[in-house]
Length: 305
Figure (spheres, rainbow, N blue to C red):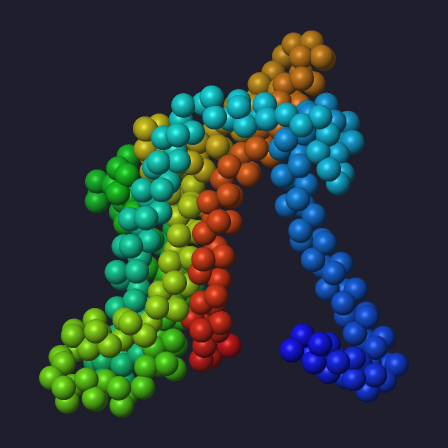
């Protein structure tokens, strides 16, 4: 079987003209170059996080780590707030994503139904919110009135719905849930809620997986709401904890003292910076491949193709 495939590829290659071959070679070269441009910075962060600070500071690290050391990670994890920040971020991500799905999936399904009263008005109302906002001060005053300032619920409830994601879900349902299927369910005695729960949701696994990824990444990387609304360190998410650690390291490196001390502190701050990027990115990098296969069926549908 393998030999047959190889033979077909050889015959296809022989049929190509010289211009076709030059085009293929040029295209592969461009794709490899673009891949290297994207991948190398990520690779450099990994090797820099475990390289000796002196080698990084002197610009000696290019393709492989030098004098491997894990001092950056050790200094990072010696900070007790790292562990509480990790736990808080996991809680915010899990419960926040569940809350987002609870609002987004039914909203997308409702907007996909032609018999929804005032559907066009509701759609335009949601579109307007994508382009116009009240501003930060009214936003803060509203959150304060809801008693969500310095409340961990603010990291879960705020931003409960992304209008863009609602429209993506709507497009998926419009293109992939045939009306005949719903009519058959109604003939069998299913009401609106039962049809949605037993017929629609089992067919919506791809778009649910895509929404889980979108919302989970947003919650994991979120720090602005925490920066504005949280002041108690025990509620800080990981991103805010890392931000404070980096700022402290930068300030320490720029504080007064001998030139040697300032340089050493700058090296340590640089190493902590690379280590913090790895620490904050690994969970998402592990999670992403689990739902990547659903992207074609879930995201690239209907008018979003």
